[in-house]
Image (tube, rainbow, N blue to C red):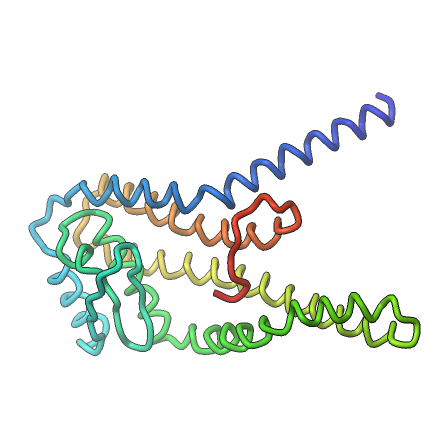
Length: 235
C-alpha cells in the first residue's frame, strides 16, 4: 500500500473518530434526559416511597444526619455539605429514575463522610478562580510573543494558560471517577429495594448519566473544532 493511501485512510479514520466524539459530546445529555423521562414512568414493584427510602438509608448509613432539601428544578438533584437537594418530582414519584437519582446522591454523601470530596471541592474552587485568568493570559501572551523584547514573558503567560487548561481536563477526569464511585455506592443502596430487572435498568440509567460527564470532558477537548457545545472549564 502506498504512502498516499495510508495517509488518506488515516485522515478518514481520524475524521470518523472526531465525528463520533462530537456526537458523544453534543448528544449525551439529550440521551440521558430521554432515559430519565422513560424511567420516570416505570414504577418499582416495592411499595416503598422515595421519601421513606431516603429516611431508611439516612438512618441506616448516616445516623439520620443528612438534611433533605426539596427543590423545584427537575433533574437538578444534588448533594452538598450534608444536604440532599431533591426535586419535588423525585421525592414524590415511585419510579426507577427517582430511586436511582436518590441512591446516587447518597453515594456522594457516603463519599463526603469518607473524606473523598474535600480536596476535590477545594481544587474545583481554586480552578474556578484560575479559570478567570486563562483567556486574558492567552490573549496577552499571544500578543507579547510577537514583541521581541517581551517574547519570553509572553511564552511564560501562554504556558500558565496551558497549565490552567490542563488542570481543567484533569479535574474533569477526576469528576468522572467520583461520579462512577458514587454510582457504585448508590447501587449498594438500591439492592435493598429493587429486583434484578429494576437493577439492570437503574445501572443503565447511571451509565447514561455518567456519559454526560464524559461529554463535558470532550466538549473541552474538541473546542478547536468549533462544533462542540460550550461548557465551563470548572463547573
